[in-house]
Image (cartoon, rainbow, N blue to C red; front, side, top):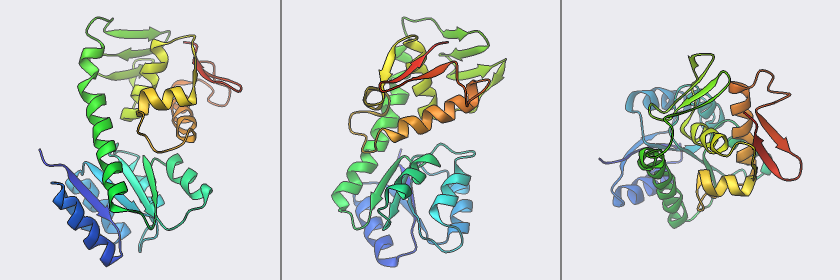
Length: 234
């Protein structure tokens, strides 16, 4: 099936360059230059990946990403001329999966796009074999992960986890009591070719705590091991 990529970018020259190169790689490309309209387009076409500029008319890319993340887990790569660390961190915190600073090479962008699709494919294809010889569920008090259905529930209520949140929690639960460094989690959950920093691990841990901890500010399930990383207690 041909992958659909939504380009949210208002610079015409860049629109055309991205479209040309992505279509050469076999992707179906949809372009929208207005932030408000991009929200409707994303909901309508359900793209497989979004290339998101930050500076846009209508709504900026950060706000669009924040809104989309309320009900979509599509990979989002942010494109921006702003190179400040705070902008990169903010983009990752609100849900972006990767970040490219303009000007960037088309070869690098295509590599990042392929990396996102490869990571999703590995997560999906490896799910069943990984659990072939294991218990169909993991239960810790009122927290249950159903490995067959790919669902996590708390007090019997299904939690809305994004794919990376699910896989991160699964990895932690399977290694209850083990201290896992950020770099280790990045390599095992995100993949060795992930280009973001360890900050993204902290962001996803915080999101998980907000969903599974009784008191996210004083976590007892996913605890921080100062100077080392994280440990799942149960």
